[in-house]
Length: 421
Image (cartoon, rainbow, N blue to C red; front, side, top):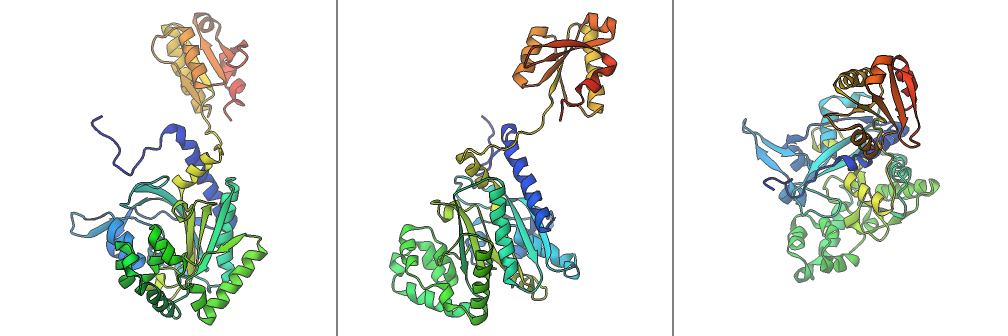
């Protein structure tokens, strides 16, 4: 092979499309139930948008972004996550003047230069829901988490775990970060090289490391919930109360911080049971400071995103099949040159009548054409030969029972109208 898909990318082949279309339909259905409207942002943005929002010291910015200079000399980055572009659009288009919160969702390709793994690629796809504006009510946090949980229930995924934490706000987080640094200070020699760097520039990310030695140190680290200010503590208390009222089986995970700098207060993930953070299906939380960081007024906001490849991987693991995509159920076969011309015209007429058709091509025998129809899995074959041309009829053959009957050509569309549903 001279050419192959670049490492970390994959082709979505026709036989896989049913899963993708199914997820897109369920994403839109969930959006409708909770009042979210779709927004499509550009694939690339000004690099400063992500450096400012995601955090200059995060792994995403320092190691994983696809950044290049365009021909105009501007620094451009392929979208490494979905929230910042939505917030940029919220500000740019004056959505603060709309009824708050503004509820938006997206389905988008995401680009990160990282080690390819099961269900995660350098170009992968995710959907996300963002609720921007309002008053920071924890009831909205519970609604967003409920939406994430109900989405996975709607696609029939089972054995999932809802992980929850609060990482505080600008007021109380410095005290927690100081306690965290103190915990790690005497054990720097046991840390991986990345975590030794994180200890100085981004201590919260220490809890996000997947290295075995670092995980052991994180297990005994101070808990963010023990360092919350009264306002954050009350917010977290109310959120847990609402989740209990909704019957959502959450677990407080004191090591959950998420990998982006913009999170405040609530963070959560949905994971397959026993899968751990590396198999996370969806994650999100509050980002009450992000709109202000991007130049707007202080604006509460929260949301979550989910990776589509990982969801499909888990659907397959649990043997959950996507509904098949609709496809033509009529095949047109012919015998002879004159009949072929009529078959071409008949196929076009049926399609104009909104009936899907696959027409035979070439000079294959009728037997070979019907074998092709059988391999395609169509329900009916329409056969035209010399006798049918003379009588103005066609033969309609049921491919399951092999029964067939003669039908006037002018009545064929009505005969087939109920087939291609």
